[in-house]
Image (cartoon, rainbow, N blue to C red; front, top):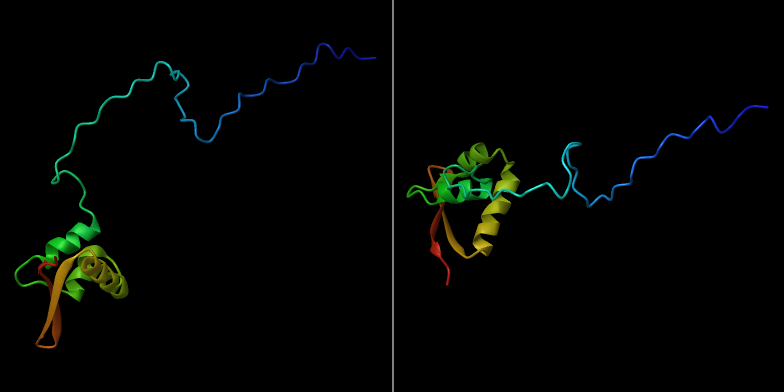
Length: 111
């Protein structure tokens, strides 16, 4: 017969819940300190595509659909949907067709 006391099962890792943060092996949860982040200015932050569209539409000449598509890398139908969203947020959007090219711009805000 063989001696079964000499063979031991490998130790299992402690289970971790999905909501628990992963910490490096050398840091314990009690030792972890949160460092406050300094607020970044708007110029340092990466601008969102929606704010980029708003900025383009606020120019006095406005922007064409092709300019908006090139700036955001969206498809034309997505860009038009963003224009609809801007209107729903209360901005007065105007469009005019000059030489066969439609230009959009923000005329003001709706009350």
